[in-house]
Length: 627
Image (tube, rainbow, N blue to C red):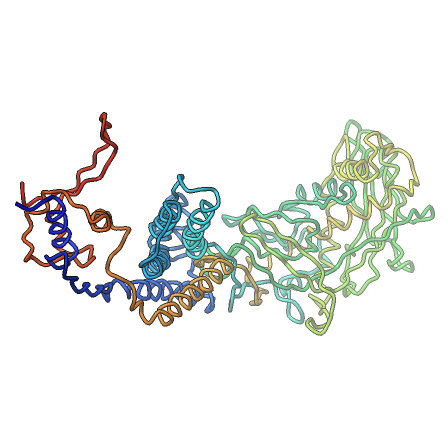
């Protein structure tokens, strides 16, 4: 019967392949090399990761975007929570290949370098943490930072992928788009020349009603309320722009002055794809209107009672009559207009005259407006203002999202030609002045003057004087407020006439626009670049390491991170096996360190953690064949 030492030797022989005779040394088994697949995994994984990173890089380099009609745009803007979930899932999948490649490379390098080396338990724990991409809290502090750093590095591609594939709504330029705008130059506003200006003040008025508003060539008659509101709100606090609505029902607002342009906004479909454009710009010819006012005590313009039409019990009538500086002084006054009041004096009446009421003066200027007012509005009496119509180019910026219009003057330069008169024939200026003059005749009242009250409202704002004294004559401080009100009225009248021209379709043409359209792109450039560079660096590193190690030729098949291989290898290393392992025939193939070897299926591992009197925690290898 064999003694105990001989039995142990025979068990060792069955496991590690030594000769049965303890006196005759056997040949050592040739170390089995790791499989080709295992050694090529890092390269395949990083090549796949690099190829995936090229997709967002190519989209970014080619400036590829998707329109607002695309499914990606709708999904990105309507389902933000779902977008985040999908991006997180895809980022994790794409980052897996990068992490797999780098982790497999570290594992192969460790298995190659740790062969036939003695390691402390702490070092073995460090190698285990690096190879399994985990953090072992039992590591000493000097080693703990290494797996923590590697864990952060392994998370990097997922972070970068998230930024590289998250859909981003971007604003792109609108190309080859046009809008219809009122025509300028020769032949513009032909309808203004169709009516005899020598006739009655409201002769030839035409009104066109549409779903987005009513439009007329007689703004003072059809849109007097809006014009009066502009007179009363023309001035604002310093530094605050004047915001006011368009005269139609389009729902757009002007930010600051309209300058009489932008009338076509909201009256036609926005340029570009329906519902896609968020803003656009175009240029339009118009008049830069302004006013310069003075008090002229010797002005030949006044209000006088009309005793000819006086009837007992009927309110008195008053004429506004006289000449302006640009009238023919060698002829009778150009005409008279009636106002009514209960008093024998015109205390609550404001009258003015601007355009020629009796003939066309070819619209060349100078243009004056003279005012006469009763004692309730003495600050307007004897006011004379020169009105200016300077042709100018305006940039009309339209925000569809905010429903706003911002008009700014464009000064001539190498990019913009000199401004052209919107209506060289002069009808537009003359008709604007006639509308302004008509306003004083249309807004007649018995108790107060609507015009006078709105001038007071604006003066209170301009002077910041809620208790403004309207009965004080010759108040030079209020002249700027009067000028603002007149300019606002002129802008509104020009806008109204341009709107009528547009809907009448008698004087329009196409104007090129530049606009902004929302589209969606994949990822942000900085994340895409970082992801691509990271993949290139790891690709170079993994391939370089594979070349340096000759394809990991010295990497053994034995993987100390495989639990089965580790237990059997531990038992081999101790050269001590449980007696149940003797059931394995010595003639069977001996284990060569391969974790996939079927021989490992012959063993069972018993983990004992319950402590006995003479028993410590242990891991025991047992034969399954014997059972």
